[in-house]
Image 1 (spheres, rainbow, N blue to C red):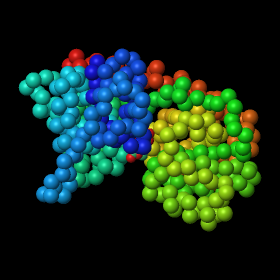
Image 2 (cartoon, protein in one colour; image 1 turned 45 degrees about the horizontal axis):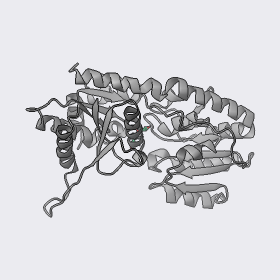
Image 3 (cartoon, rainbow, N blue to C red; image 1 turned 30 degrees about the vertical axis):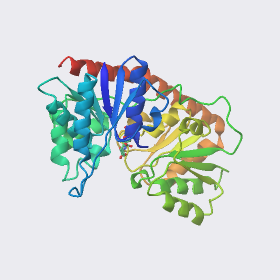
Image 4 (cartoon, rainbow, N blue to C red; image 1 turned 90 degrees about the horizontal axis):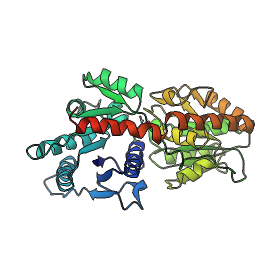
Length: 367
Ligand code: GMT
């Protein structure tokens, strides 16, 4: 099939899922086109995948340059030129609206169905905002197919938007060859890792507080990977708690698989996660995830089996699990192997990509 993919090509999970999906589809012989405002970070070195930049020209009259319209025009142009079979947009706002317009633009010459994948905040935050609610609901209903990255998000969307359109849950996936446990770790203290865009919803300060608790009994360190608005506050907290030497703020990195291989425990104290892709990447790398009982996280982590779940903000409980694991690395490694099994058996590309392919076939055939 010839597939056009649109996403936010940044460090967010939805962009990573879209990019990894594009790579996997290309590996399976599909012709993949990315239509975005920047080249998705993980796409480099793949000449078989085409990238079409969306340029938004500005005009003094525009206080807000209309990206959604420029994207729609570009989608229609690329679809016509390369005879695309369908568009697959990640994150509803504004991508599904643009896809809907592109479909309309071409309606007299070719059929251009589009699939919308909901990732979380496009529904739980942005979509529920009054300024976007009606258009989010409308674009979901107008999509030829809709998927959600967890059962929790699917249920939430149906409830909040009162949509009758069937939404299929297709969980996120991980490339288990890329994210794999290491045979040998570089020597060093037991290590925790946190990986996010450091937005308030990620509660990054909780990671620092967990480290402070853990270090009362175990000489552990913490790697903070990523960047965002809460980084400064987290660095100050680490300083105030006297932890500067045991926390490393590594910033945005492209070598995430290698960093994960060096960790024992992954901290994800988020207030909300519709799935929690970072935890899955950690699990696939044999790292034990400590998450919160929110959103789709319990669909990924089974408490006590392949990780631990605690209530949002319960730093002490999360620290107890972390200290137990880091104080007994044999137990930690055994649980890391269980986490790896979960990633391979339930969230592998081999299992999940065919679900998207089947959905594409249905929409292309007009089902
Ligand atoms: O967090 C966001 O604002 C959006 C999105 C992103 O681009 O990172 O994150 C969501 O999609 C990820 C990939 O499907 C999920 O793993 C995240 O759990 C989800 N974030 C939230 O629900 C907060």
